[in-house]
Image (cartoon, rainbow, N blue to C red; front, side, top):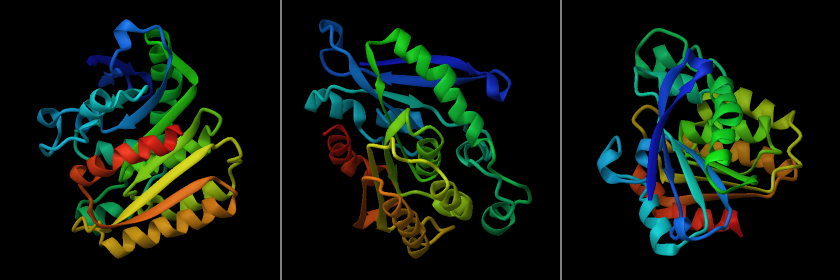
Length: 256
């Protein structure tokens, strides 16, 4: 069952954002409390007809078929211009515009404000409205969503203690995220999953760059003693259909 509502983001001037909450099978008939998985690009998570490119992650069907005791909260991305890059990019990137997008400008830098919205506005609302386990909070995302999820884990590891970062665009803020991981106390992180496909070519960035970018982050996380699992998925592309295929196993891993 999916419930949808809009909520203003004070950090971005009060602009409203669509929130989609997928409740587990049997939620209405039980009195149980559930862990919550927060995910980005909410429009792509549950139903194909809502997805930006016509294919979703299929997570509504997953919860129904497997009866996994989990609430999934999807936050739609900002579709205006390149605002998705701005909100999911923790630090500004002065080169991605002219070099990759062929457009002048500096992109990124709103990621901290976006995570503050999730932590201080959305999470309290979800914990009040639904039967959650506030201390069991997971975050997951792909591409730029993986970058901002990793940032959230480093910024608030005592809250976002389980993370899944798929096909991550670490290259957008490579030096900054590496330094941030190195300088963060990550002892509160319980599990960190990350992966990359062998065919991640997005026409702007080739697969080898994606793989090398993630390998560097993995080595730093491992050196910090984080319980991190990293996989290179043979043949996997930078697409919702690939994430849909492997997300059930990832959720199982994070909830063990």
